[in-house]
Length: 163
Image (cartoon, rainbow, N blue to C red; front, side, top):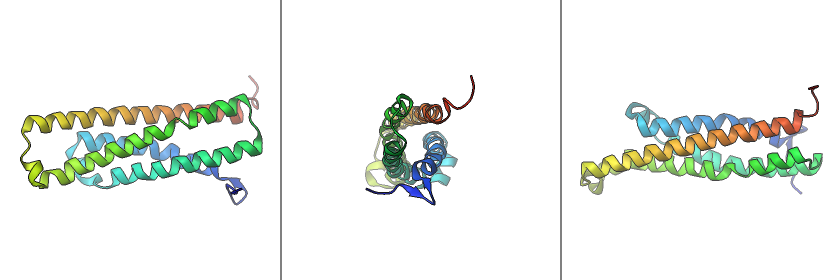
């Protein structure tokens, strides 16, 4: 069995901080990439790269959490946290795919023969589809991280402090 710990600390505890920071940052990047041309030029490949980082980081965090659950035991609060934690991957895959689509659409398509020949109305429709998808996945991923974090905090601290 793989040991998911570093320096005596469970790896899950360390990784969740990266996930909690990178999901909202990536969400903001995906939305800015969709709506603001100046931000789009500056973000460039960072948007899909951040999404890809999350696609890799989230499963590792879940696996480390499963290892930690085997160590500390399953309680209803831990089970609730685990169930919610498993819902994040589709959201971050969506963030990655939308970020990649934005990067391709705004970065590569305009310089291709195909992109130059598209009617303006079709370009507008695609732009709005990207904006809606960006908002959908950004809000969904961020909200999901809040729910997961709240359930994790309750699993750890729920019975410690007096009511």
